[in-house]
Image (cartoon, rainbow, N blue to C red; front, side, top):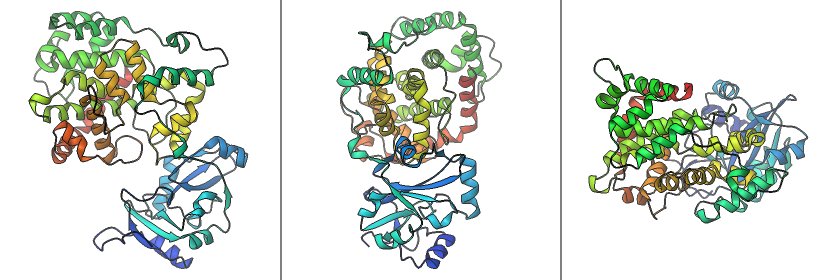
Length: 466
């Protein structure tokens, strides 16, 4: 065994798992789940089902589980079991995570053959942070009733475009060509049939870049859109802003509570969000779109204020970047409607992966690429398209770096608190250094935002209803 055994003070494998392994005469060592462990040795377990019944699937975390290959192999269209069913099953054994132990369930098991190339495997114990290191021969003995197959795609063969924005247009065109039977038109925007930017949004964008714009100007724009006007008054009256007295008008909401900058960015976020409707399908476990957006924007607002004054980027734009950081998700659902459901099902069965790998594997592009492209097409500020495009690159240090850096930091901090989907990812010290923020100060910002979680959910629900 190569890993350092867990210290006595740390959590241990649940008793039901220790008893099960003892009954099977399987030797194991408890290992702390930490960065640096080989993903090829870490066993990802998912429980799938269809009309025939449930199936446990085991594969290495160095691979993406491809449901299409699984269908070819089994002749079944399997999807992840419902969250409620999985929680009930795990709850019976007082487990938080599904261990890759076929004997734990009565379901048949299918495993990726490449697992047995490793000298030892690391299996979830059922307790977060604790893995079980088991020798290959012992692991193989537990699979005596399981079936083997090749159905995973090595992550090494999937290359999400994180740092080549000049290739975005070509790759989006290639993705469109792969999913349409017709020849790609010369103009990309005609091909993907993006709806025109709403008139209200166009007016707000003009105000954003007008240095002479006044409260009267934004009040006039908002009041011409009855739904938006009602929304602004509703925001201002929300307990989240704790405004004194009644809010009687749009001007009252802007002057007394929200301020010019916040209103213009909230209004723009809502106007853009209304351009594309929320998809009816979504992955299980997913934080609702507007909840994720509002939480991220609120955390970014706090992080921006916590930065040294001389280094702070434009607060309104950083807030808007948080509000729209996942806009590409809506765009994928709009552009690839027949295939969006397939993306959702793959996200459910690959919880160990960032969505970029899944989207790259299935479409050839990511939501970040297509979202940033649309921001440029709509003539939004360069800071915003840069924030969307490079939000998953913690080492990005080129023009307007503070915008994607703040989104990256906010998303990872929230994910560590259980908000947002995808694997927990380390936050490098260099990211804090570039933003001139301490880790403790950033964690404090998130804690303060989450103290108002109920009120933020209320605010987010207003976006959803709109």
